[in-house]
Amino acid sequence: RKEVEQDPGPFNVPEGATVAFNCTYSNSASQSFFWYRQDCRKEPKLLMSVYSSGNEDGRFTAQLNRASQYISLLIRDSKLSDSATYLCVVNTISGNQFYFGTGTSLTVIP
Amino acid sequence: DAGITQSPRHKVTETGTPVTLRCHQTENHRYMYWYRQDPGHGLRLIHYSYGVKDTDKGEVSDGYSVSRSKTEDFLLTLESATSSQTSVYFCAISGQLAGGSYEQYFGPGTRLTVT
Picture 1 (cartoon, rainbow over the protein chains, first blue to last red):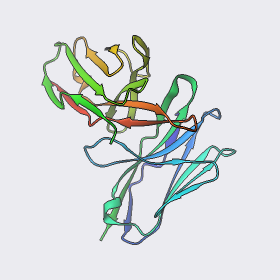
Picture 2: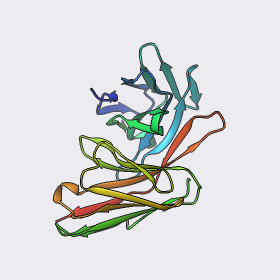
Picture 3: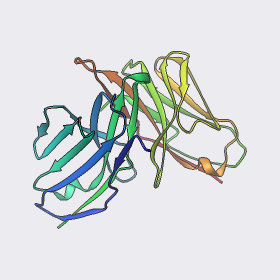
Picture 4: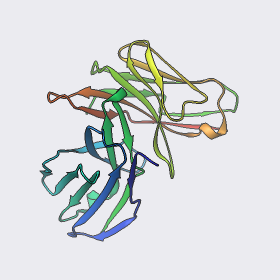
């Protein structure tokens, strides 16, 4: 079983739409959770950390459900510039290793 | 942006030749990582380092070796390159935040083609 699983999409949404991505992780001892964004032929970049109480950064909201081992990312009022692949990432303290989902592709259409 | 550079950024090499990729950081972070990224597989850990001369294998370490003689440099070597090692290679570093958790930052990547 993979450490982190996410729906690969693709998600094609119109500008202004709200879109949600989900992710599950298998290791209940996981400590930290993140969403990264990766543009085509570029490196992954940290979008936001995910906190137990949920957190918001502008149009982006991340939530964590430890009981269900589930992480989500909500993007409101989608912009063309949001088109990218979004990676769900989980960190375990043991060895300080990071586990990546395969990514969810988002295309925002004019 | 975190201070991470990779060299070379692009390389084409022939099967059977040795190849070394370099990762350099200016953040003085303890942890450094090498990943490869291939379509359908996402990012897969090759090796990582938790200090100078301290390294460990990741999930796809066969055919690769690493060395870390200084905090700022982490080298990935393909002893005898094969076509299956054609990929994009990312170096990453990990630093501890004030709350005790870690975040990871990536270099720009190296595109390696083995012919």
